Structures are given as structure tokens and as C-alpha cells.
Length: 279
Length: 296
Image 1 (cartoon, chains in turn yellow, orange):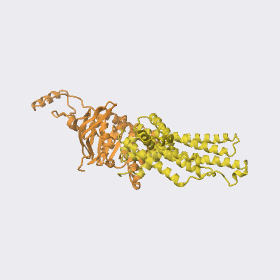
Image 2 (spheres, rainbow over the protein chains, first blue to last red):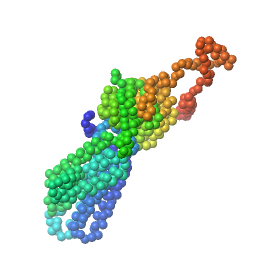
Image 3 (spheres, each protein chain N blue to C red):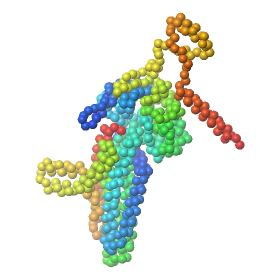
């Protein structure tokens, strides 16, 4: 009882997911799915040949990252502040429930929502690509498809998994901001700023590589350590086509481990800050 | 139990105000003891520190100084909350769950064993009189029903101490009477109840002891009867005495060394009158309904 309780976390996560369903977050998923299908039919108007597949894949991966990031930040913020503003957190935390159980449950609940989002978009993207590849196999030169299909469909789901972990990381950071913030708006704005910093973190890494020893280098190195590098998760260019080598499983495990360490760190930071918060 | 339900010693809570470093003292050196199996009322005007004290007891706030123990365990320990049930003021619950699902959810959060879960849920729902509405979504409940289902979630894990923050605020007299009845039932089952309320008439008839807080400090603490009875006076309620007899009674009192202070008609409280009237109509209505059902 002195440590985390997986049963309680699961209960809180399930309830958070139910709340997400009730708040019609799934409607937004449906809209994104419809937009994706509509855009893939739009690409048919151009005669790109097999480049059309790359176009659709890039577009799908981009949509997954863009809409997923928005959904991860807004859903985490909304579902956290609902509990605080409606004072349901007060009733829950007056029971033998650790604050870390509460935060971990909220994060896991949002991750269930994000899993539904990632799976829906990945399946949809795979279906659209399969359909377009099948059509193109009958239209373009047979030499292109001499060794069968040119898309590794399993890679779509590897990309989806990495994005899901990135959304988890983004959710944990949002939860950390929410733990000391008083408003939804502040949390959302700060979280988006953090997203941009993490996304462009590689520039800082390049910079400190060129810097001489000193305080500046230490500072940039420190910031590089605090903010996770989101570019690590963007393997879309190296995935998908059989003409390129598959990503080794060890790399995927390393990136997953990197994400899990950061998720845990931000969750613990959120708990430290949430401990002092008046509910 | 030998340990008091709650022991608060030299409790102080300061809240920072702005960035100037100034502090607002919400609770100021409070000493308080709530004994096992008593109904204890925490009274005080708004801003007197009642809610802050309750939050510290529940481990939701850390005190600036002093300590708070629940049955001998520091209240900041999560484990101490196993023996505590809490109903917040104006509770809000997940509107999309039914009453039964809500109580079940909190039961599982409190670690109620799966084997006895259904029995425990049914038992508390019956105790609070929500059996007929338990299948309905919480979003459709009236204020009184919300308080009652709130009480059910507070006692689902069979806590020894039940803390009720303004349990009858916004509830009609019938609902308030029902809640008061549940509180008495809890006491008869050996539980300790700490309640804060502004409805002093209800506290008076319900609590064994009360404490009055003002600006975070304890003003008075003791039995209700000690505070509200005129110790130097006795009252006789007489029936059938003619107006001429008043003089004789006065003379008899004076002969006994006493002094008649006032003669007045005994009054029924408006609460009691209202309850009597409504309950009478309710029983008439029920009798008529059952007659109609019996008729072919």
C-alpha cells in the first residue's frame, strides 16, 4: 500500500477513458479519419506513379503527428482540470489513493485514447496505401513491382508505436505543467511551447557540438537533457519502403526505453509539484 | 478504541498571498480532540478555518506547524485514510455513471474485496435509501439524492471515522432529516462522525459535542447541552392551568426562594412542524395509492 497500486491506476485510467469518450474526443478522431481518406483520393488527380505512395505515407504520418500532438495536449489538460474544477479529485484523494496513482491513472487513461487514435489512423493509412499500391501495380511498369509489393506494412505500426510513446511523453510533460498551473489555457500554451522546443531540440544539440567548453555549452547540454529529443521518434523516412533497410528492432527498443524513462521522470516531477497543490 | 478518532495539536496553516511573501493564517494553533463513537460538530463562520482543518485531517493539505493524528496515525499517511470516509460540500460526481456504478467505483478505489463488493454496495445503497434510484445516472439526481449517494460512497469501505462537510447544505428539510437519521444510524453502528455545518438547529439536535472556530482559533469546545441550557433556571410545562392559577404558582415559586422569570407558550420548531405536516400528507398519499392498486 506504500507504493503504486496497478489496480487503482487501472481503475482511474478506465474512468478517464470513459470520460474522454463522453466528451466526444472520438468525434475529432472520426473527422481526422474522414479528412485522411478524402485527401488520398485527392492525390489520385496527379500522375505521380509510385511517388504517390510516398506522398500518402508522408501525409498520413504528418497527420498522425500533428493531430496526435494536439489531441495529447488538449485531452490531458481537459481530463486533468475536469477532476480539479469539478472537485471529483477531492473525493478521490480523500480515499486511500496516492497522488501518484491519480496522476499515473490520468496519464494512462489519455494514453488509451491515444492508442485508439494511433490504431485508427495506422489501419486507415495501411488500407489506403494497400488500395493505391494495388491499383498502381496494374498501371505502372511491372519492373517496379518485380519483387512484389514495395511497402512494408508492418512499419506503419512501428511508426505508430513510436508516435504513441511520443504522445505519452508529451502527455506526461503536459501533466507536469498542469500540476502547478491554475488554468487550462496556460497549460495548453506552455505545453505547445515545450512541444516546439522538443521538436527542434536537435538544433541545440548541433549547436553545442560546435561550441567550445564553457558555461554556454553546459547550459545548452543541460537544456538538451531536460527536454527530450522528439526527432528520435521521426523515423518515417527510414521506414515503409522495401528499397530501404528495415529499422533494427534494437533501435525501436532503445527509443521506447528513452521515452519510458522520460515519462517516468516527468510523472515524478508532476507528483512532486502536485503534492503541494491545494485541491 | 483507546485512541481518539482525531487528535489535533498546535495545528497552524499559513497560505502564501501573492509574491510579496505575506502569509494568510487560516488555522492558528488549534488543539482539538474528537473521541471515538461520538458525533462532533465543527462550527464557525465562513473563513474560520473549518474546511482547511478538514483538508488537513484528510491529508489533502500539509500543515505549516503542529500535527494531526487519525486513530493514532499521522493524517498525512495515505494508510490513515483507510479508516476515513469523506463527503465534500456540494459534491459533484461523474454524471455519466449510475448511482450503483459510482459507489462500486469508489469501493474498488478503496480496495473493497471483489468477493464482498456487491453485498457492500447494496448494503450502503439501502442504508442511504437510494435503492430505487441506484440504476439512474447521477446526472439526473436531485441535490438531496446527490448528498445521499455521496454518503454511500463515503462509507462504502466501512470507515471508523466519517467526515461530512456541510452535508445538508441546499437540501430540503425532508432530505436533511433523512441525512440526520443516517448519521444517527452510523453512530449506533459504532462510527465516529465529524460534521461541519451552518445549520445550527440541526447540529444542536444531532451532535454530542461541538467546537466553535473563529479566525482559525478554537473559541469554545464542549457538549451542546452545556452551551445552550440556562444552568440557573428550570422550566415546567403545565397543561390545563387557569389564568387565575398563575398567581398561585408565582407565590409558590417565591415561597420556595425562586423567582418566576417568564411565562410563555411552548413552541414547536418550524422544522418539526414542517416535517410533521409533510410526513402526514405523504402517508395519506401512500394510503390512497395502495387503495387504488388494490381496487379491481
